[in-house]
Structures are given as C-alpha cells and as structure tokens.
Picture 1 (cartoon, rainbow, N blue to C red):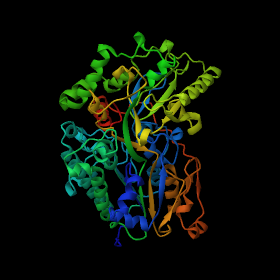
Picture 2 (cartoon, one colour):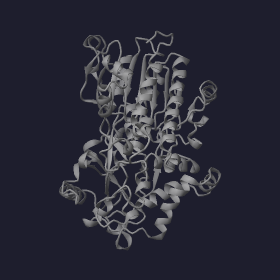
Picture 3 (tube, rainbow, N blue to C red):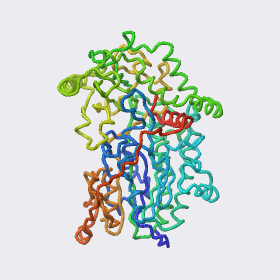
Length: 578
C-alpha cells in the first residue's frame, strides 16, 4: 500500500453475506490472492450475527453496537402496533444513534455508502449514500438518497451512474443467467470506483463501503454452483456454474484499489453481516402446523385462500414486477399504502382471530410465532400472564416434538422467546417466539404461506420442477447462516492471529475505542481487546460516554405510497418476500 495524503484512520469494507465456508477453500486453492494476503497480516475469525441473522437487524446492530431490542429493527417489515397491518422498515425506525451520528457529534469526518436501513440519509458530518432500502426508480440512486444531495452530480461526472441494487430478476426470469451475472459484476465495478473516488476526495476519520452483491449472488445462483443442493440446476455456462466465485473474485480484485487509497497506518476492516449456505426443497407451512395443533383457525375451516386471495397474490407479483412505472406510480398514489395492505392481507387475511391463539407471518426465510394476546392484538384471546406462559410452554413442548415426515428427524433446533435474546424498550416489536429450524442434509428449510399452497401437511417437499416452484425458488436457493467474516489490520493489530467469540455488535465500540472516542454506556457490544496488541490496551484507557438518548424514531409512514412498490419488488427479487 502506498502512503497517501488522505490520512484515513479507519476504513471498513463490507462484503454482505460473505462466509469463510467459501473463502477458506478458495484461498487453499490459491484463489482470492488479495484477501489471502490481507488475512495473513490481520487478526481474523468468524463474526456472530444478530438474532435473527438477517440484513436489516444485522447491519443496524453493526452501526449502533446494540441488540435489536434497543435499536428497534428486527426485519425488513414490521407490524404496526395494535393492528394486523405491516409496513416496510427504513432508517426512520432506527431508535439509536449510529456510529456515524456519534462521530459526527464530536466533529469527526465520516463517509458511508451502501449500508441498508440508511434511507432517508442522516445529515452527518461527511457523506452518505443509502443502501438498498433507498427506493430509487429502476435501482438508480437519486438525490434524495445521498447526503449532501449535490454529491450525486459529482459522482456521475467522475464515475457514472450509481446503482443502488442490481436489478437482475427480469433477466433471471428469462433465464438470461450470464447477463444477470454480468450486471452484478458491472454494479460492483461502479460501486468500487465510487468508493475509490470518495476515499481520494478527502481524509476520513471513518469510511465504510458495503457491497451487497455477494449476498445477492448467493440467493440467486447457489442452485447453479452447488451440485449437492436439492435445488441444483445444471447450467451449460461455466461462468454461471462459478457465479458465486466470480463475484468474490471481483471483490478480491477490487480490494487493492481500495486499500491503496489508505496510508499504512490506517486501521482496515473487512466484515460481513452473516454467513451463507444452501436452501433445500423442504417447505414449512407454520400456520398449517399451528392449525393442526389446534392453536389457529382459518376462515372457512381450511387454509384455502379463495378467489380474492389468489387475485391479490397474482396482482402483487405481476403488478409490482411488470406494470409500467408511470401506471404503477399512478395506482400507488391513488391507493395510499396499497403495497403494505397487500402484504398484510396475504399474511393475515384468512385467519379466524376469534379461534386463534398463535399465528405466524410465514416468512420465506424465518419461522416465527406471535401469541394472540388480549389487549395487544386487535382481536386477542389469550390472557397475558399465566395463560400466556402456559401457551408458550405448550408451544415449546410441541415444537420440540415436531418431526419431519420426510426424514423422521426433529424439525426444530432452538425455540427462542424474545425476552431471552433481546433487551431494551423495543423488544415487543419482535415476534414472541423465533423458531430456529435444523438443516436437513445441510440445507435450510424454506417458509411458505399456508394459504398460497393449501398444503395437506405442514412440511412437504416441493421439487424444483413442480408447478410454481421455479418462481418461488427463483431468489431462494441460498440463504443466511449465523457467522460472517471479520478481518482487522492496523499498526496496533497483530498479524496472522485468529479471534473467537467476536460479534457483529462489537465492531462499533471497538472502532470508537481505537479512535479514542467515548463509548456510550448502553452499547451492548464490547471492545474486541483480543484484536488489539496488549501494549496498546495498557496505554489506551477506555473512555465511557453517556447513554444514547436518541428517541427520534417515529411511527410515521416510512415511505411514500409509490415508493412502497419499489421496495416491495426489491425485497421480492432478493427472496425476502413471496
């Protein structure tokens, strides 16, 4: 690395969803040479994600150093308290100060690009380009997603159009897999050159760039690259068969371009928010299981959605994806909140609340259960207190005893009550129970709406060639795992050491410590002292700061009506919504 006049103090490079499960074998084969050299001169190890291990709560915990019970972000959507409505989440729902805000408040210069849950952008002391929660038409960033807004014209003049998220689903839907991969690689190139431009723009106290494409390619292309996957799809293209490696190789290629813009004494991190692995062809219908256990009742006596339900589902899929933008905008402006209402109807519209004690949102990527508590839910029937506790205990017993009819093996690995994993004033925004399922043959169960499929059993195997399966699995052949990656390099960080027990929420307080800034006393994360040379620790006392009193999050709508359509479609394309 060359010495530059831009005396950056901390530079963070995020590879969303990156995993040592892939990186280690590739490095052993002599691939990813730049990351291999970086690892040799770093302290590194697995980085435990949040519960659940998904993008929004994970990166928000990274930025705040807090668990979701304190910062208030648990998922891509949230239920509106006291209703069966849902709304999409963005930075308006973050209830704690980010590291950018904390550093800005003490006069530090900061830069951030690509991190989700950052729209609308904070007016920080520096620059901020929002992540994929920024609605930008056609995935193109507009000035509303950039701070300061005039920075966008500068980037366009110096680099070109900045792309928020690679919009590959139209290409994937037409089986143009090579073109979709080329678009991902092109987007990476644009983001890398933008980051380099900003790194050369001025000296940053802390600068971060996040590349989400390593997550995107895992969701869409795992089935082409893993011959052992139940969803394996043979491709005639060698490039497509190595799609995930192609993206990692591009990230590796760009690593020196970014590191060379930093002086030798800069502290440099390479991190991810969670790991990645394959998804299988076994599907769980959680509400069907609850109904079979006598804890949920569907209107009409069964999960059949009916004509109205099917029409809404088709309208959501085809309308949000293929309507011309002008027509889509007109509809969404005239029908305020229609995307949220469609999503809420598809999740909850067929439940008979008067006979339901527990229910699930039936997310594709996570099994959760809400208790239908009287006084909390609109039509709650379970009394808080003893009856609630008895029902939770009953659910634990029955979930533990649940066996997969295909294998005869237990379905559930862990049952986590929100009081066990979260602490803070917003933990009641979480479902009552998070149900962590096992990985049959190493592949994750998928979740699906009971009403969309009218299943005969709560678990069934849906082969990739079954009717409608290709659409369902399109962005879901790979999914998240608990452990991401952590690599740290700097003058006070030992080379070639391995760290165990690091958590995503520990990175923010560690950065503040390395900069000599106060660490708010209510941060849940701890300083990763095992990353730092003991002599530095001995000479650098911790500076305790006041508890974060941020309360600026509001219950106001997070998006305009027409922007909801863009975010809903983007989350579908990423596999996070059906």
